[in-house]
Image 1 (cartoon, rainbow, N blue to C red):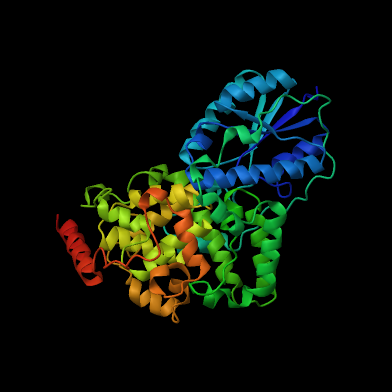
Image 2 (cartoon, one colour):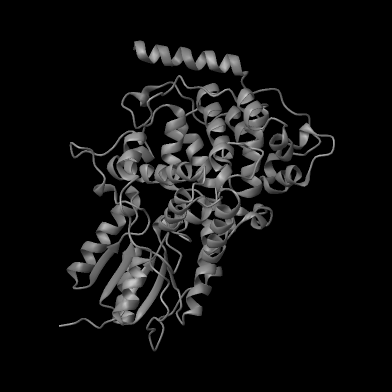
Amino acid sequence: MNDNRPILVWFRRDLRLSDHPALHEAARSGRVVVPVFLHDQVIEGLGAAPKWRLGLGIEAFSDSLEALGLRLILRRGNALAELQKLVRETGAGAVWWTRQYDPDQIERDSEIKSTLQGAGIEAKSFPGHLLFEPWDVATGQGKFYQVYTPFWRSVRGRDVAVRLPAPADVAAPAHWPESDALESWQMGHAMNRGADVVRPYLHIGEAAARQRLASFARDRFDSYGTDRDRLDKDATSGLSENLTYGEISPLALWETGQRAMEAGKAGAETFLKEIVWREFAYHLVYHTPQITHDSWRAGWDSFPWQDESAETLRWKQGRTGIEVVDAAMREMYVTGRMHNRARMLVGSYLTKHMMTHWRVGQRWFEECLIDWDPAANAMGWQWVAGSGPDAAPYFRIFNPDTQAEKFDPKRAYRSAWVAELSQDPPGTALEFFSACPRNWNLTPDAAYPAPVVELATGRNRALSAYEHRKTA
């Protein structure tokens, strides 16, 4: 017998209408669809910037659903309990969602699926967050990949799913269940005054994401391979923000990159590799979930990293005395994002020169980045610290000064973000003092500080510790 009861479509990091298998199938079924977003234990644990940005994404997505004649039902509380309530209130016979792969969400979703199925409710998860499911990519021996390059070679020629259009017609219920007001969640509360500074730099929602991708494909593909590491150029897609909240699918990026390859665009393959780097991060998080909180490589938990300190505070404040590191940290407070090359430099300086644990940096990025991603953040910090999946671990120590000379040759990036380096600082540099916490008591007329750790001193200390670890 066909089940004609309503379907709850539970949205999470998939705030879009197109390329959404769960929504597409629900619309095709002809059954009543009730879209739901839950402010549950996972959302409660988000840092200030990603929680605020997620709230803005929910608002934009709610508007998109209203254009289809649907409402996004908002509930706050334990995810299982709230879904059970909604099943009772709507008479739903199914709960569908897009899969997530980090350990916290897998644990939550597994419990929900088991409990709902035990009660006779169809609980079904769909792909959509990744191009390739982590269990579908394996070595010749049937194991998961631990090195990126073989992973890339394995997936670069694979077929991917067919892109799905946004549904044109979805059956709505005659009576909608009650919904929280998004404002009552106060998702931007912890941002304080920083929200007004960061807000103009955001590109929120599916339409903005698609426009961003089209602009990148039109204007920057050819130069992407050569310029994406340049700190002083707007050469990247900026789409990490939208991918984080599922406002655009990886399929859309992959298809665009493949078309660029066929058209002979010089940077197309590099762009595709960056998409697969994200896939690799989730591949590792799924198969080795400890990467999100413990050193991925055996033996690194005993490495003599320091925890939080007065020096760490200077790193957070963008006052290490290393210009490019400070510029990157301040860029993050003003825009909510940080250039990928800059992330490597601030990470290397913290974990190598300052000998501070990568978890300190991981936690701070989780608090401050609007494009924070649990897999990319964990793998990125461990990669730069040397404790993660990388063929050249700890002894790769970036020199921030030489990196700045190479990727910011005319000092445009450093001048844009560090006010103390200029007699007449630009507005971008001054915005930092309006965004950073008030209790830091920072002003643009203060003297620029001496380095927390001199580069040569820090490098030698890090190499000594690495050699000692090998001997031990």
